[in-house]
Length: 171
Image (tube, rainbow, N blue to C red):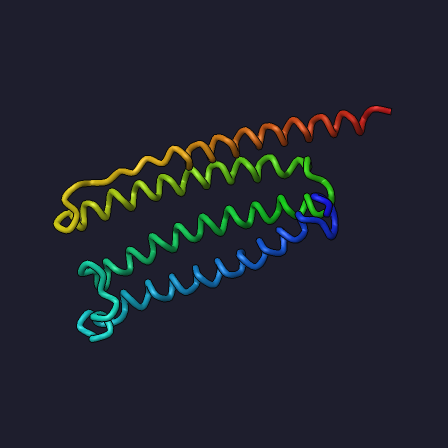
């Protein structure tokens, strides 16, 4: 099976990304509705007894759901950019100039996900300081390596697009 073009592996992966993209939109909508309900429903409902986690109720639960919604929104942003890259792969044009800023934005979004992770760990460590005796600040070298790889790939794609445009000018 071919890697590029219609009917290729890239077109199959584009289809999988489309399904993931719409599932993420649904998850984001559910998280936002749940966060709103956590704010609006009275705190003394028996309902909260079933979903209570470390004493999180009302505004605290809503804040946690909103933080998770932000995380899902960033993942949705990344998947949308990857879908656009795979669209160019499906038509057989991997070095399309628009793929360079797409890859760069994916790199920034991946870095943002790691920073969100650090922020959530810092806030939850502070809010739940009685439950967690030590503050965790998990450094993930794999994630930062992935960020660097995506930025390097963006430069590779930029150079590939430049070489392709030069080749098109050659008679």
